[in-house]
Length: 295
Image 1: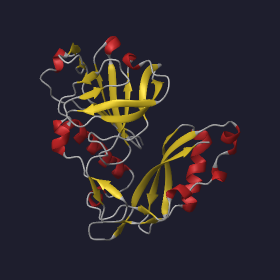
Image 2: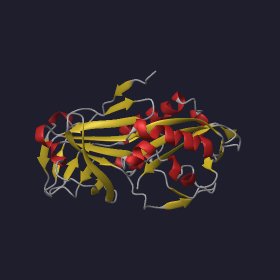
Image 3: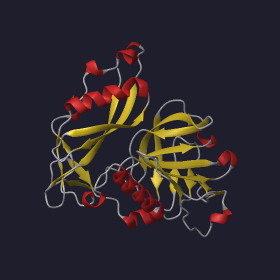
Image 4: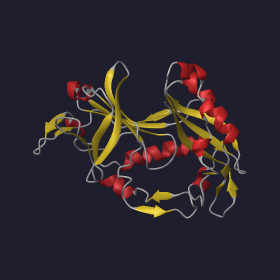
């Protein structure tokens, strides 16, 4: 069964005056022409909103396929037509530091120009303060606070646009809260104990190097002969004993060519230190990662 779709509306006093305006600093400001929409899918949550109209319309969307404060972005609209090769775009959330995020030009829907961002992002850059985790999973980052989410009232798109564009989002707190509700429901949909996961003392942690879960011989022969690269994002259900119990494909550039190879390889070779609840007891959990097939 698929999950429901839900549209949420964030109250903004200037919503009725939607459109475009030229800011004093020569930044084109686009105001919303629709409320935020949260889409509940089986393996991801998408938050999207339309800004501006006609040739100045931009659809800003972010996706999460697990709880957390990182997300993937897509920008869609006529103003984004131009780049033909991947590059980095300057993105600024409110008054947070500017970020340079890798994107791939493409099209979505009925051929609408789009920038599809390949790197995960946060409203605050990953280069900000780091904290060492207590469970030896490596470096972790300070979480984004609700106050920081509320302080973000715009998203500014700079290079490679000739003239910057600012999407006037209004305070993002309610929108991100809606996404959290969606990702919590994702866990419930996956039969994960949501309440216990909020207070884990350790996440499911790979034993050994995940890069060795797939080997050169796992490259699908049909794709190899075509010199076909691929990207597959997968999720493993991990039992309380650290053994993977199921493999789920969340995103794939060529489902017929790569999905089976990924799931067969990781189910055969992946092993984990199980997730632990706040009292140190093993708990069934999940693990998400990406495989890139390339030459």
